[in-house]
Length: 111
Image (cartoon, rainbow, N blue to C red; front, side, top):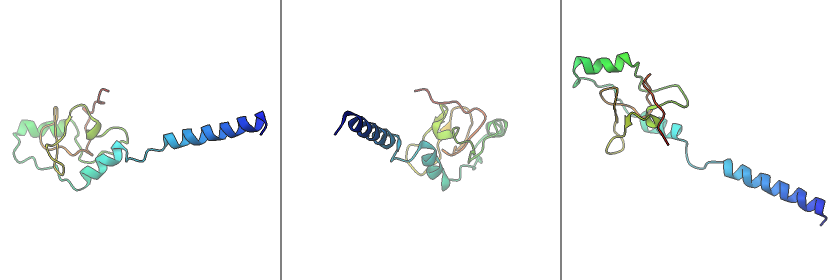
């Protein structure tokens, strides 16, 4: 094998390794939020005071957000439920919160 052939082979091998590293076998956080929130109805505000229920309207809360990078599960204000299959809560919007939801108070989690 010549030096040129060896370098070409190494370049191809390095490209294959980099491509494999970019593939993520685990579902993205966005996919996880959609999966967790798909079967949840987090719209019951019967136990909230009128002022508390107003936080949902004034912050434009939606149970299912359309923004690919902004959703409750990756929001700093989201508080996950104690067990799976339930709605979470929020520090700024009162009542049950869907992990797939969104509101205008969305704030990125700090790393």
